[in-house]
Image (cartoon, rainbow, N blue to C red; front, side, top):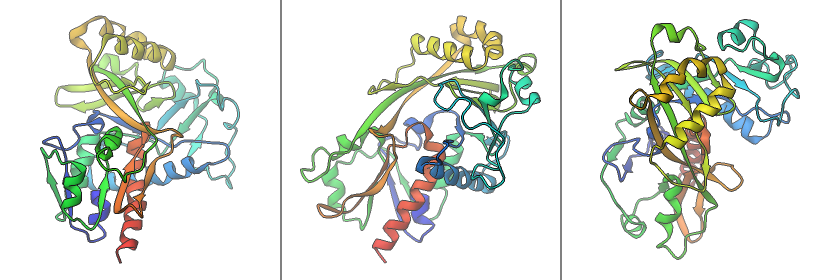
Length: 339
């Protein structure tokens, strides 16, 4: 949001309770960029296509490919039964999905250890990628008109008193708590969703058993990711709707392994010992925020009662894909309102 406004000529102060950026849910070590694919090409599908292109363009210009992100493609396994066998017929040239999705090749299935799986029940997203949020956020904030202020515990009334021409709340599940002291603030339909990923390091031999691309559909799996400690794999995440727990638990580790067994049986077998050895298994837990209808919220908060206050939140599990596009649309709205 700060970068979108700065690119339009605004001077932007970013106030964060944490001392450094990406201390909340954005601190997840890795994420996957992919489209929400639907037969009817619903609004979320359109938004994720636009968002994916926007993030990829920014990454190409500001991040290190292979280190901070990689356009490796994403294999989506249709394990939920909602759209199974419905859309994965050959995509016609006049389809909006042409160039975006197709059925995976025999080679791609073999690389994932899924040679016996029906290709038409899976989806290959060639534009998909994995990306590390920390360098992405660092690059977004790296603008002469963006000024980061960490360790700030401002209250809503204090923010009002500062007299900014525009205020954007990007507080995730904490948005409602922040607004609670303002009698004029509207209620927002926000729901916290706690989640945990499991991760560890892998050697060259294990790497042969892992796909060279990201996989999602029932949790997710990304491997061959360079870190200061060596190549890493990441699996998960869990999804606890209505909860805000950020403690890494053995129960969630076990849940991630159960998901991986269904998502990628070969990879799960290769990593089974990791889950049995506590000191070789890492974990990260955070809280996403979604809305009751699972649609992102990027709009004016209340044009009458709280003029010039806006909110960007409820990006759910697709924050990396959606955030920049939603921010651009909201920045355009703010800019037009103040011209």
